[in-house]
Length: 488
Ligand code: NDP
Image (cartoon, rainbow, N blue to C red; front, side, top):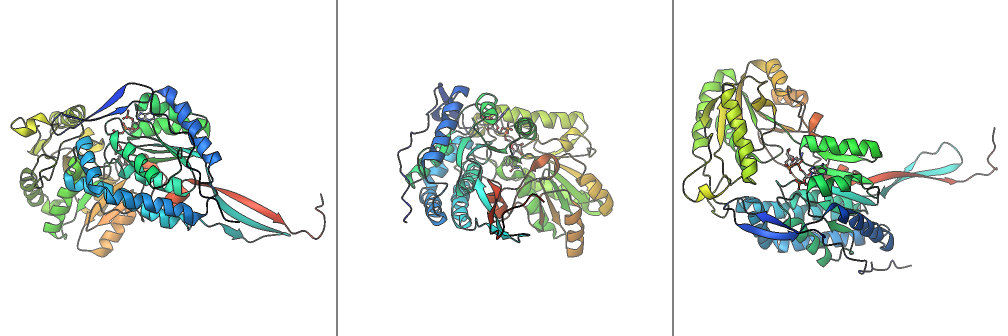
């Protein structure tokens, strides 16, 4: 019997009953946009509509190739609209133009990838031990809550929404208040591509109010969170109480290691882009630099020179290498860490101030900063700053390196620059990190699982595991008995 096309007329998502939420462009303080602000009371409606969409649409039971068609179309439309979406992204987040294009392309890539992966959602026939036939199949959870931070709008959302939809769920998405516009654009594109109404809901509101209400809502069956470790811990505690699964992509303080036998030029470029790309507002930023003591002074001096030469500028200037931070409040936090470092005895080898002249004085800019002279246990070396601040530390031999590099609560990523592949292998195995880059840094794509060790998270997004994160197993037994079942 042919499977009917999904009807398109489930009730629309609530628009948010509260006042407006303003998005401020951190490059100059102008208003980037205005969206309806949801309140805690809107969560009930969003979750109810999402369940209604799950129940009244055949999405869950739609042939996987048909589900894939919709996901593929979302990816195609995102790609077709990359420039206008990137422009909006640039105003919302202040990221430089090329990075904004990358975010949109990455989001499109996630939908294309999960369109293909969707069709791998196959069950298993398990070897039976009796007169029955047994199988394990993947089932969606129903309604999933996805909560995202501000540092990679649309990319982070797509990384959750694409696999969650591919697995047959509905998603209620709460993006960061700082960057509220791209998630709404994603919603529009999803509907344009034919995603049945109600399967994706977007609630723009505060984390403490709307996010917390969403996490506690009894209709939400699984939580997928990306953000800071302390928020993640609070969300995991609620998930623990509610006994629902949670995927957590949290913060980092990633070690970036340069051995004496490394290609110096390649390592310098890798270290610079590893920390100062996205103005350091990246969960995998290589924010702790470990350099082998024999080359420490020379390497750090060259790095300081290149750090000072980085072009800090407006996001739409093609020459800009480092844009503004997300907000003035965040800049104050970053500056506060540098002051703390100074008080703890750091030498400031580059940066360490906010520009006060010209166009940059109007934005939330902070100069790329290099500190050294601190012990590995200093707060600046231990806590996530999430800004353009790199701390350099020397090491003597592999044991010392591993002890220092693993000596934080985090375990998200690590980078190693060395000419010796046996050494790279030993270090990569010993480092407590979810991703390790050898003679490269911050490479990432949707087909390779991503996530953290220790306080950097639970579970893996992306890749085939990323699809399984949003499914639960169901085992089914089919009796083939020749005799009635007996008690004995
Ligand atoms: P936050 O943890 O402050 O916020 C993340 C999201 O959670 C926001 O949407 C926020 O809402 C919401 N939120 C806040 N409190 C609650 C709560 N009690 N219940 C439910 N939701 C809540 O992180 P940031 O937005 O500041 O993002 C930066 C952090 O994200 C860094 O630590 C970074 O390392 C991490 N990150 C991790 C990644 C990874 O893949 N491992 C990738 C990207 C970032 P709102 O802010 O709107 O109030």
